[in-house]
Image 1 (spheres, rainbow, N blue to C red):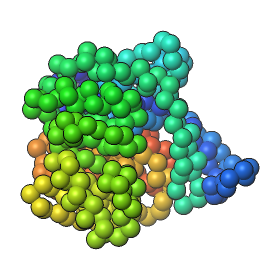
Image 2: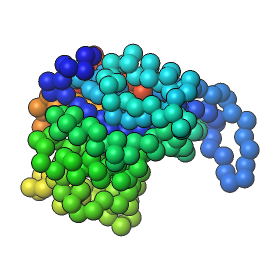
Image 3: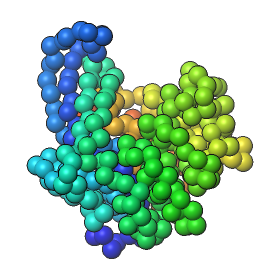
Length: 311
């Protein structure tokens, strides 16, 4: 993708990690040592994953983020370019190592993840400010919080008067001031995160998720609460609320990055003018299609943001 070919485009502001994925029959308990079945290294980070999902949807995308001036940073930069992600705003932080995500995947696809921020910490409010023009020019801006919370807030403040649609995947959950919430067009969270934002137990059933999504749509302009195999619930400030069911995958190998695929395809659909409901419906289908393969971004097939089907 050429960086000047940005009609109906997405700008993702977020993290880039080297994923280190350990395969095991089950997750270890406290103090327990297990023998793993294998280890896989690859491209990851919520920002990188979401940018790849946009690119795999055929929508122009750039990534504003940071990698280290090390071999891993160079490899991840190359991988992102190979996936079609625009790299003009991807910074190199010479003083910090490339970030890493340490993932344990058990049989059945469930995972546990610990992130070491590394160079992602250098995606500071000052770095965000240097790209103010690019932020304002994007059709859709996507933010998540594996970069400093102050940088997420800075981006939202810079976008206050911009025409861009703003999608915030608040993962992990960080505190945002009211002025920042006012600029969130679509909030995307999973059930656990929804509970954390609302200061309530996470929703356990679709009815609970509907109530949570409706409450979140009074904080942001609209919300998407993801439910894993249960699909997602979307709510808009005008009171519309919809449960979107997920297709049943033929098998579940690894759920890592499925949520990021959902966010990326959602953003791609919005950038192409789809309604929130249509974009979210395609995003749920696309996310489900990723769980049949190992890894995050490397497992993403070509998506159609119009249907969520593989291209």
